[in-house]
Length: 242
Length: 226
Ligand SMILES: Nc1ncnc2c1ncn2[C@@H]1O[C@H](COP(=O)(O)OP(=O)(O)OP(=O)(O)O)[C@@H](O)[C@H]1O
Ligand SMILES: [Mg+2]
Image (tube, rainbow over all chains, first blue to last red; front, side):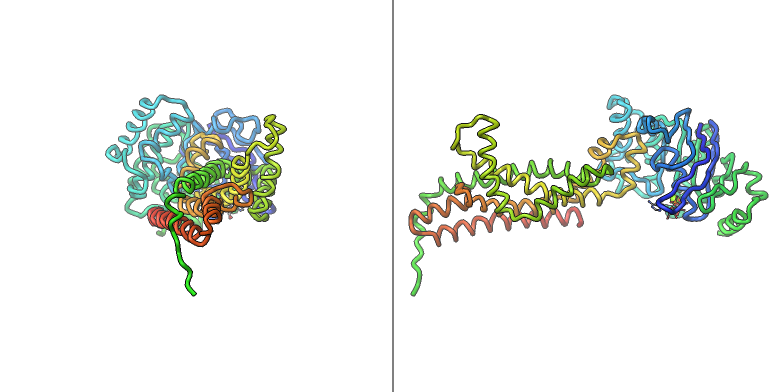
């Protein structure tokens, strides 16, 4: 479904990504972790073409992201993305947030879009909030709306960039629960997160990044049992001690 | 030695002054409307990653911001009539001073609006644009549906402030002897030998309008929280 082959990226002389390769098969959940600044966000943004890269190839559902002939908006319409800071549109109601792209990008009729949006809002447990604006919701609620907004586009896979790291601790689980459910339903997911509980529960593989390189790419069990690299061992020790 | 104020020529001149005010408002409204539309395009060009577009916009903005408004207006009074004569086949000498004034102000104000709008666009967090793109929106959709509505909401106070300045600056059309509100007041005063009274009256009217508008700006500023 997502195939990343030998991707490198630099800003001027600064190398953000170096020869990154990994694979996310259909129905698989991959957790990407690593220290701050290791290039996790950059890598995940390369997958839907939000960040350009200079070398290598990324193929999503058979379409090459880096190919200048690729219609990126059309590809992105079916690759869901959830951001650290939710990025709901603050000038629109929750209902409009859920329907705007369905109508303007997919061309769905308004009532169909609304029906689909409300169904997903119900699914993340926020049916009663459709008429509100994002500013009136808590962070956890906003992030659940953001997930529903991405799902409303009928994505073939979902990308998450630290979806819970901007949340107060008591709100993390309400978001993780939605993500776990999604994973268990067989959604293909690439998730940047430090929530190792989530990784243990639903991840198939864990990718560990350090200084722009994929240092470790292992099945979940192997990763937690015996991380090969010293950096991964240190990293795990640090975050599991929290 | 005191000056004997005589306000008696004002009531009779009110209809004429009102005609002048209409010209003032016409020029102001046109310049605001064109200024915002053209200014938005200039701002988007300036922020574009295509260097020729961004240089072109930067050149335009810097040029107009570095020339006194009076000169721009004078040039347009000299150029636009000739242009209209040759392009539209207008008879030489037809009165196109109002049109020239509108064109001059609109092009001049666009440069200022472009800078305000550019700042407004940049005030919208980058993550909003990323979210719009991630949902499959094109550049145009992301701008129209996500960025500009937020940018304009942040910009309302600044746009209004600029409009107030513009409203006052329209009095500069006196260089073409066009009877805007200020020009009309001057003409009446000159005719009746009551320049001081007429200009005091015109000043009071400008003050009341602009001060009320600035109170409105303050209200919006509170609402936007900026
Ligand atoms: N636009 C940019 N220009 C220059 N350098 C950048 C730019 N964006 C990111 N970087 C650098 O690239 C590196 C990787 O950034 P990235 O955001 O991908 O890291 P990350 O692993 O997601 O970190 P975090 O855990 O803090 O989110 C960082 O060192 C960052 O400073
Ligand atoms: Mg990051």
